[in-house]
Length: 176
Length: 102
Image: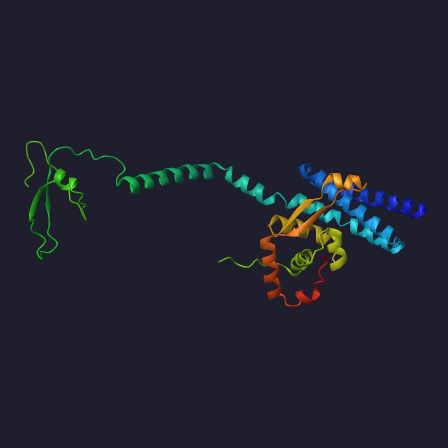
C-alpha cells in the first residue's frame, strides 16, 4: 500500500514535470489555469489507477505518454487561442481602416439627416421665384400650364420630379 | 435559419462523448482512444466555438477532499445541435459512441 502511494507520487511528479516544461509554451496569462487543469487531470488519473490496483508498468507508460500531449495543447494555446483576436486588432489598428470608419460614420449621419428631415439643411431661397408646372395629364408637355410662386408651391409639400434652373442676370430679368 | 456546423469526425466524436456525460479530458481520451495531443486542442477549439462550456469545480470541495480541483466540460445548446447534425452527417458516430455515463 505504502509502495503504491510512493509510486503514485513519483508518477505524478514525473507527469507534472513534463506539463511544467510544456507550460513554457503557453502564453503567460493562460498559463496558471492551463497548468491547473493538467495537474488536476494527472492527479485524478493516477489516483484512479492506484485505487483500482491498476498502477502497473503499462498504465504508467500510458499516462506518461498522454502527458506528452501537453505539448501540442500548449502549442495550440500559443498559436491559435488569440490568433483571431490579434488579427482583428491588427486590422482595426491600421490608419486606412480608421479613416474608413470615420468616413462611414459621416456618410451614415448624412443619410440619416436626409431621410429624417427630408433635406440636409433649410433652403437658402427666400426671394419670390416663379416656376412653371407641367400638367402630366396633358399630352403636349412642352407648354407650361401653371405659373406658380415657388415658396407657395413648396409650402404645400410638393416635390419636383425634375428641375430646371434659369439664371437671372442683373439688368436682364428672366422672363417667366 | 442557422447553418449546421461542419465538424470533423474527431471533433464530433469528442462532442458526442461529452454529451454522453464524460466531462473530463482524460475520460474523453479513455473512452475514445484518442491521444491527449488531439483531445485537448479539440476541447479548446470546441470551447472557443461555443459548442462546449467549461467550469471549474468548487475549490473548497476539492480542498476538503485533499485533491486538486478539476475542470469539466459540458455541451452548450449549440453543441447539442451540432451533435445532432454530426450524427446525420456521420451515421456511424451513433454506434461509435459509448453508453451515457450519467
